Structures are given as structure tokens and as C-alpha cells.
Image (cartoon, rainbow, N blue to C red):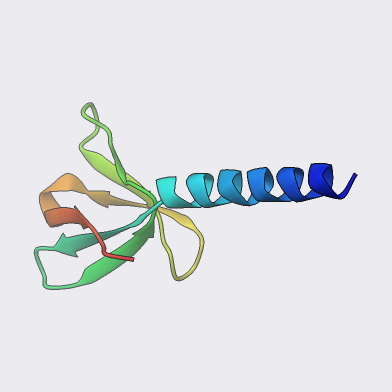
Length: 77
């Protein structure tokens, strides 16, 4: 019984670490010198030219024009 509980706990912990590792913060640098930290990878809409992202500080989903983005890259967490 104890072995079963230990195995289940270890499996659950490993699964949580795997899922948490998939979502990484990104840095979006704008042409005016600001850096926006996003929660997860921003999505670029090719039709509208907008970059949608979830702001890591506020938790709100926001958009920025692609012309205003200088670079996007993954942060070392």
C-alpha cells in the first residue's frame, strides 16, 4: 500500500514538472526600447499583423502591432 502511494506521488510530481517546463516566459522587445515579458509564446497573426500575448505581470491578454516588435526570444527561467 505504501509503495503504491509512493509510486503515485512520484509519477504525479514528474508529470507536473514536465508540464511546467513546457510553458516558458518570452521577452518581446519593442522598437521604442521597452521589454514586455510574456507568459508563454506570443502568437503572430499573419492576416492582421498583430502579436497576441499574455502579459506575465498583469495576466491579461494583449496585442501589439508586429511593426512595433524589434525581437522576440525565450527567457532563461
